[in-house]
Length: 466
Ligand SMILES: Cc1cc2nc3c(=O)[nH]c(=O)nc-3n(C[C@H](O)[C@H](O)[C@H](O)COP(=O)(O)O)c2cc1C
Image (cartoon, rainbow, N blue to C red; front, top):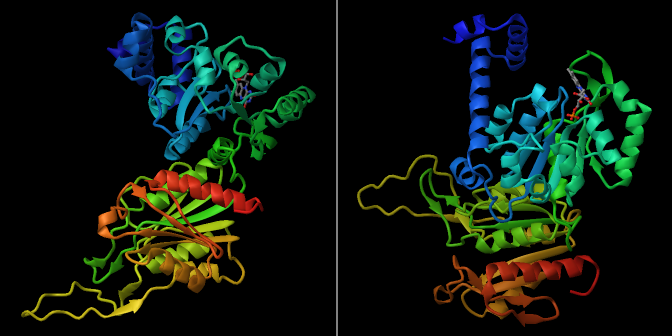
């Protein structure tokens, strides 16, 4: 049936279909099917009332709290195909994406392909009445944390520099109150043209950020030079940097450990403790929210990774120490993990067998002391080294002794007796111990403890008295 339809087309339409099919790497029949499907979906879009459309197609999911959103405008250049990979890279980083394709961009990638990767409809038309009722151009411009144009064509740069707004992409760029990041891509002569360079200078003066272009081979012409779009991974990194909140710890590197460690007895059994990782994870989230560059080294926990944090997963104390040393230097290191003090002395490479009522002797040896190792580090000691002390008696006295023995700056001590419910619970009561004083913080959520600690760290790192 499809081939019958194609045979009946006039020569010009056949030629156009052949070109389109070649561009998308499809057979002419498949291309015709795609066109029909897109046309019927577009028809459905116009016929469906906005309120139904919203729920029926799940077109614009609201991102979970803390998840950042990027509005990606794809311009009409060969590099548009790389933007599909960029969308994937952003989603890997848990960044929500909405996508606008310019009219020219749709010559290079289909809205079907972009929509499939984004996971919701893409936006193409300023004068789409359904779109204006649904998510109009003003909402598109505002309901985002950052607007990214990739590839940014010479044409889009010129329009933005000149304040044009005659299509969806440019109207959104003019209407947004968010930062704009452009990833230009064009022929080297177009890039070095006085007009483009004039527009570049104007856009920079207007506060627009740029990533690339890079030097290299041009896909379409075989020419070399400056004009290749930055690679998707480079653009993703620039987006992450733009999305980082500005706060009291902007520019600071913070290292945090969290959770228990598991020390193997044999290949199936291990020594563990009841640490949930909630306090360490809350500190990592609070540090990231304050703008810090955060590395979280965490033992086995069932918590999800905090947003905007580099997470390194380890099992044992020795792995944790290795990961911590690799993550140095840092401005502050907070050791909230409940590291096992001991591990098995010998290696059991096979499961220990039950044999005739004989109880195996578990001989233990001491694990490395991560807090003391970092606090006494010769070349890479962070300016602030902060430990946690989990005590079941004489909390403040033991914490003071630990502070002196380990050589750290502050200890946050808590009473982890089962009756307190702190281990694994959501609330914490901290005794904050420094060489000169001990404070008792009010019982509060672990998130509030984290915020209080991050404020103290920010004050101390700024040089003011903590
Ligand atoms: C095959 C082909 C490749 C193109 N590649 C680029 C490009 O890489 N960069 C660019 O600025 N323009 C490129 N253009 C020109 C743009 O598509 C054209 O300026 C268009 O109007 C841009 O529209 P937009 O900026 O709304 O997406 C190309 C055109 C064609 C036909």
